[in-house]
Amino acid sequence: IPLYVHTPPKPEGVLDINSEKYILYLGRNDGNKRVELLLEAFLQLTDTDYSLYVTLNPDDITSALFKKVRDDRRIKWLGYVDEEQKEKLLQRADAVVFPTSWESFGYVAFEASQYAKPLLCSDLPVFRELLDSNGVIFFHNTIDSLTAALREFLLLSEEKKRAMGMANYRRLSNFTFEKAKQQYQALFERLQTT
Image (cartoon, rainbow, N blue to C red):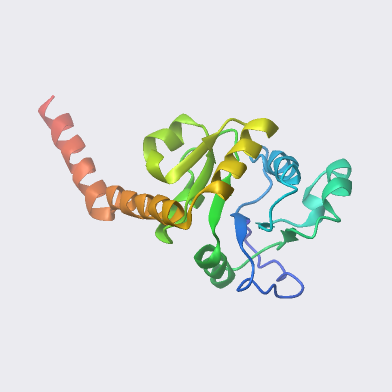
């Protein structure tokens, strides 16, 4: 992430992610991604020791917003991360946040589910259909709604966070290769009989 053909440079400096509690934004800054909404909402949380890790560079953000976020030490700009770094970030994250205005599938949510992570996602039909609502805090794409979702997550017990992550992990069993193969086979059989 991002989906480059060439290999972008690795971020300067390696963060010590063992000692921090953080919420992860894993993605790029495309037209449908609502990263600036996430940053504005995170700035509302003045009473938390959580950090926000974003796989973006500061120049991916408008200059007006960057002036607001540049001095907030809780926001960590990771830039491009390779697969190994991505796996480490997902393993150690407390949650993954996925603000977007549309998605065809939402692969990042499934990557986070492999690591049994709670999800905070934009309230889109595709997520309601594919994800387990017991593992997701849904929000509307407004600063107030996303801020409320972040606050809700921060107030959860560790037990509830683990339960959310396990709900997401279990949901992955609905999307195995074998199940997809069976569904396609049933579809083709129905088409042959009509």
